[in-house]
Image (cartoon, rainbow, N blue to C red):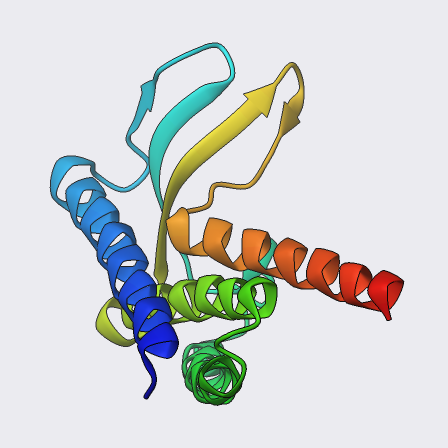
Length: 157
């Protein structure tokens, strides 16, 4: 592994550590459903998600745990190989590192507890975004960076 890939790997380790530490604090400090209102638009609340984003497949009967663990492992392996191969392409490597970090964080949750711990709760008026966590944010930001990087590459090309 070259030094550039090593730096991306270090970023992944730091982000996964932050994600897991934040979830550990929530699990040890909040009962399921317990919340702290911080502002009129932001709460901390402990939620368990057995599905994917927006609780997709949450009521599927249990098989989804193993499906999402497998999907997470495959995503980490494929993106990890691509990240190492293209470590000098900053936009792509950053996107891959973010997505890998999120996939690892949520896969650890599924393997450990059988669900993902979510706790960030945004809302405004009658609109309420589903609770999420740092790993979800990493995946979302990574996907945005990936699209922007590709659009930039097409424009330059």
